[in-house]
Image (cartoon, rainbow, N blue to C red; front, side):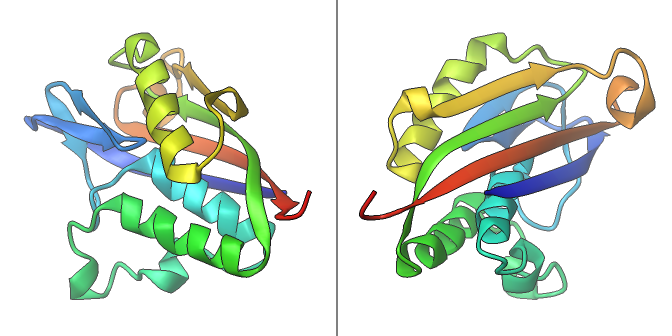
Amino acid sequence: MGLGSDLHRLLPDRDGFRLGGVWVSCGFGVAAHSDGDVLLHALADALLGAMAAGDIGDLFPDTAPENANQDSVEFLHAALDRVWAAGYRVGNVDLTLRLQRPKLAALKIEIREVLSKLLSIPIDCVSVKAKTGEGLDAVGRGEAIACEAAVLLLPCDA
């Protein structure tokens, strides 16, 4: 089992941001070296954590120019390659997004569909929940977006 988390500061006057590989159109974006997809970052870290294989910062340091504006799907693929090479597969994932606005209810199914395909698992093995910050902390004040991820790996022969 692995746990992952990520947090990014929000920036005004942007067209939107990527979340779980899905474009969220709104009046702000994320501050990040890569594309800033907090969901995919947390998920990749959870996958790597389940194998005690470091984190995405080890694989894709934000000090490396070649990682600037990198598509976070590449981070996820790198983590999955390590999972599969070690003889494991993803059993299920549970993700909790924390964002004050916009409301994500309409996008959760689309995000689950994208993740199901990326992870090669049935959609009913992908849980995506969204919470607000209730006006508290950086998330609640609309200054940040965060995601926590839990993943269960199973042996490929199970």
